[in-house]
Length: 261
Length: 263
Image (cartoon, rainbow over all chains, first blue to last red; front, top):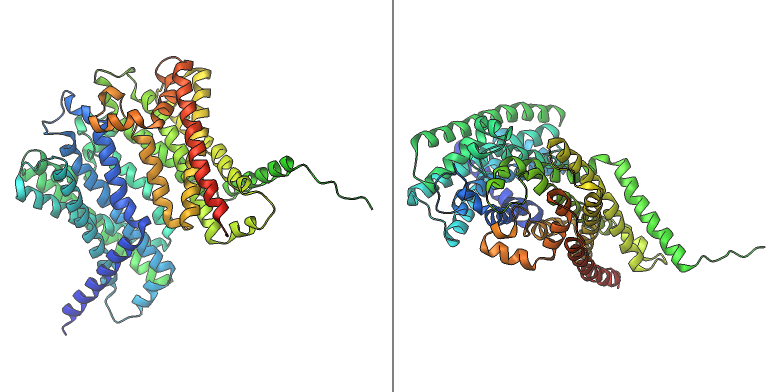
């Protein structure tokens, strides 16, 4: 078997393991699916009148607008959960066993990220299904839905890279878990949940430059109006930026982990 | 030799509850980091919701132009919900580590063991509530008046007791910390499916229906009244009755599970 095929098998096996791990532990799946679904329902029902505010973009319903926000929340928490699971593996010595196996080190991180990407894919499908069931239309049809799914999956993997880097650097599940509130902060100061123009300062200004805003807009536009090349490009660039940042952090963290054991 | 004088049962029970509350307090002092998520989460929700949904007060139907004032009691109640749920998680940890088994073989009645957990959560909930309140005041939320503040803190403490009963019920039922998401999600749903984000008239149909029958709506309205207007008995007593009802129901469920432990 060629080296590439072996690496693909390793990544697939580790990815499948991380998916199974998530679905077997309620404390891992709850933040990815249960909490964002709950918040989506409550925010849609509670703040639905916002569509009547002057300056709110034309949408079919507030649910249609909020779907992208729920996906963003879910993918961010999927990245965080992936980091927690990797840190648990380090604490329990499982990662040490992988380090001593004849597999490339990057495959260990990539396996975890493949699992996180799969969870991102699952969350995109889940929220699209919820939206369709409760009457939200995808304005740009199947191509728009596919674009949203691809962006959410890629963004989950990108954010997972940062979670994995922190897990490798600290080796502590509680430290990675402690980032949970930070995830919410970063999300709240983006345009994931509300149009940036209608947000209150200083959140409004921060949201303008927050990379998550670009991803949220890239996911949202195909749902509420149509595929916009500029929005898609900005979303892709934001994801690539997070990927590069995560890769650099992971490379340093992996080197540190190999040094300290 | 002088025979030991037996203390009356009520004094022994009070001393046991005091000891359990002191244990919870020690946990807070010795592991201060453990209290941070309980304080951070409602603060982040307050700041986030205010920054994101602040423009909602432009809609007709809001009794105040300040969303800070409107949302701060909800965040304080959320803090109580998180604290109560955390008490349930701690109880589940005590079960997993065998600490509760040691308490169960003591002569303390089961209700006393439960009361210690619940009252400790109730007292602890005042920390996040005070923190969120201070942040809100700094950001421009209105002063609710001493009576309004007192009512809000009573509602917060009692809501934490309700959440602790819910958390204890689940902890004793599942005997595992894996039940933690259910404890937190349950409280989150109960507190947010009310008039938390907007007045009843502005909620979407399905949420309006739920908010009408959700007893926590009365608690939210009672806690909020000082922030958006004056304090009245008419807006206070439904909240008190709702809390008493939930405490009786969830307390009974938790006590039933506590009595089943080890049998």
